[in-house]
Image 1 (tube, protein in one colour):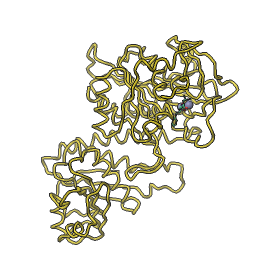
Image 2 (tube, helix red, strand yellow; image 1 turned 90 degrees about the horizontal axis):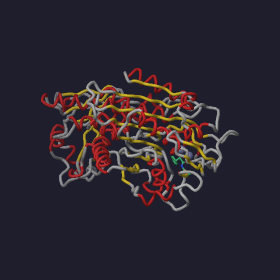
Image 3 (cartoon, rainbow, N blue to C red; image 1 turned 180 degrees about the vertical axis):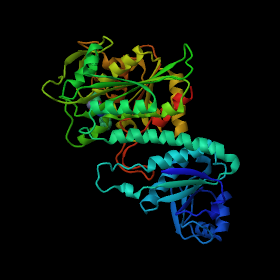
Image 4 (cartoon, helix red, strand yellow; image 1 turned 90 degrees about the vertical axis):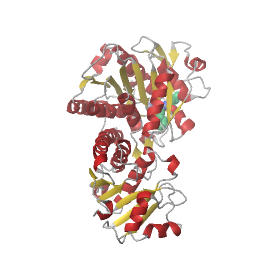
Length: 496
Ligand code: BES
Ligand code: ZN
Ligand code: ZN
């Protein structure tokens, strides 16, 4: 999709649809909307009077052949209360407008930004919202919905003075949304089309194209490094594991500066292993590599945005299969760090592969660790599909992430990991066990297990099991992978 900025008068803009947004306030026909109303001979005021135009969040009012305007259609989207309006609202408005229009076979449309919105930040959010909304999960359909996709978007309502800020936001928005769609594309792939080996090839190709350093560890190198926790999961099936290491190094590396480690869980299919999952819904476990895909997407964006900080991305990848050689409940494994683990449930495999991924990232020089993983069903119980779970060992670092989550409109909620929870994973026959002893708090138990491998390094764990996949389409996003956490993490790294 092409996106461009327009500084010419918007009332005279020839387009398939002119979109703007209306606030829910005593008089919704104000500011630029009242200019539109004048050009359209009072049409909008009449709609407001009749109660059809209220500004309620994502209310859609479509007018064909609006007299006085050159546009073929006028679409007004409700923006909710003005006091609550942020760039996150505008991102959703842009996405919802695009999806509303594309099913009506519109190919080209324009968004008129409201007064004070022709800025860097708001333009970025429009680009992000529109590009993410244009994504469909129809790669394997022989009849593509893509025939119904938007080709051209014009952003209008900019003055000459706004142009340079607008262009900056537009370009950043495109980089981020395309990285998000790259991750969503990987997450969508079924496990027969995306094994750990294939994921590693795709990661390598992405890194090379982006100009990032990349190393792929194969099963032999993984064994040499004694990644016993990762290998224990991989032994259940014939597909060999991989560890992807993608590194971004800034042009000027300050000695003693923090090095950020991004570790993503990439289980390309999670059957549960010998502790096998029920058949119902198991097909969804192809998205158990969303954490890894998201981290690779973050690196793809960082390669272009060029932050001032070094970032090492480590993605351990395997299937979790219940083959004849699979590990069994009660087996004891030795992680790369040397810690021994009693595997009481082979379905708690994400924490096992992250244990080795995190230890390796530290060994490579990462000082600040962030992992993302579809780790637990328990986080879905706690936070549903609304907030991602955030667990942090260092409050200032965690606060920084929460600020980025707020700024980028990705909802996240902090969960506790105080020492009282350490009891849950204390081992009886090994150092630690991979599940808690039946006391609830499953998402916290998972986090506490991972924490064992972080040492003294500031660390954040994101449990995205509930938020990485939309079971139903949203007005602004297709059903399927969301690419959640990518925008937050890019924002966080850029803030260094
Ligand atoms: N991949 C799952 C977690 C998951 C659940 C992701 C639902 C997405 C949606 C993970 O490996 C898992 O199976 N976790 C177990 C842990 C339990 C055995 C302690 C779970 O949550 O049931
Ligand atoms: Zn599992
Ligand atoms: Zn899993």
